[in-house]
Image (cartoon, rainbow, N blue to C red):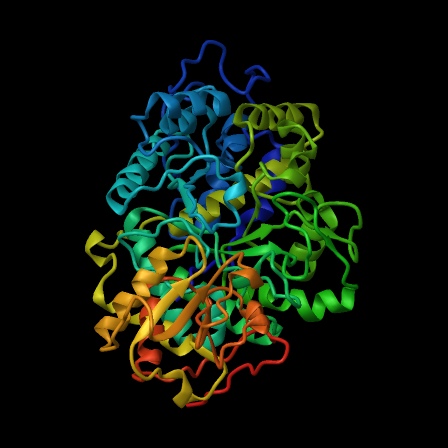
Length: 581
């Protein structure tokens, strides 16, 4: 069952009383955000963590409201921050990681960062070569599952010492699968969202995402910044295969299924990038994309998957760095009260945590870190991801509360939502590490990958090759080509260095020059748009270069499976699926 967040803020009615009576915990510390002379890595200002009070029962919202009533301003400001940190361990880092943390937050280790700023959470970062989000990932915390498990345990130990330590730290990552996959070894790696869209079976989607969520929970990760709820516009290359497809109704079903799967495993799901990044020409890592749709088009084409994900109980919605001209022209949604409060809260009725996209992305860095943090919280964000300078963001928020430019009621509201989510996630026993990459989870991924393979040109019979195969690939895809060759051999197909039927692989970022004119079969491992230019008699799409997708492709080429997927996006001049079951 989904995490029951629909009643997340049932207790927020007490917030006005809390702030009116001063129970929000004003302190007399300086505006620097830390006690004078407080040593790095030590908790100051509150001697011991706040234990659950009399209302610490089963209701997360009531527990959160009661706890917030006893926190200081410093504590609440920390709860709305979720930075990254340098280092693969909470307490032991290299000299280079310590230098990175010094520049970011004036501390040496992730644990010291949590303690000094009373943080609500931390995001684990890392990226692969094809990752379009790598532009703001300046470090990595991910080496292997054992390391991640040890890291998250150390982070939680640091968080438990905070005044808000009765609630677990939020530890998140971007495990979307496809081109955005933070943890890629030792775990079950699912195909991309677009592959799920091609398989078009929400039951398979829910099962696969529950398997993925179980493994994240085993690693100590309780927030996944997925699924991507963006509906893809024509030939969009910004979101690409991170989207389930171009149809709002079909995408809505996929998003809701992914939410149910993740949250059924005890991991909070995040709908992104609100109110929709799928129709943009610009990348919000570099510029502020402009959404030119009128309100009717936004309602019909972009918002339905968010509405469906909210109805499924999604714990978080991520605000996009997007200029929504139909609602608040000239203002990024990150800083727009009309988008986040009036639309998302008011019209769509979202009650959970609104989390910003990375505050170290170009559209958010138009303001200094402190000012940007204040603007984002005032607009309606409850949790700020990846501030480019933790010290400045923290100090800016604290100073604004004291000056009245950030109303205390808004800070109390945000901190209460964050803590409500934390208490909702608390108390579950983590799955055993042995669940990672288990046979049952691999089978869930395999079923999706097999159902997703699509023939955009060629019949079912023509997709099965005759005789030996030569695998070629665009530059830099040797590892994927080798994975396909190995899978073909296992499926009984002879693979030769040259002279066989050429099966050519293309993927993320490739162009017409990367095609092979001699290929009998061309395979798109990302969006299928490039197949418009391919001359091969057989055109297939896997939408993903994962090992499980290559195994599914090998079964199709060996004639052991039929490519019955349906392309979630139209490709000019080609069928959306020329092979049916």
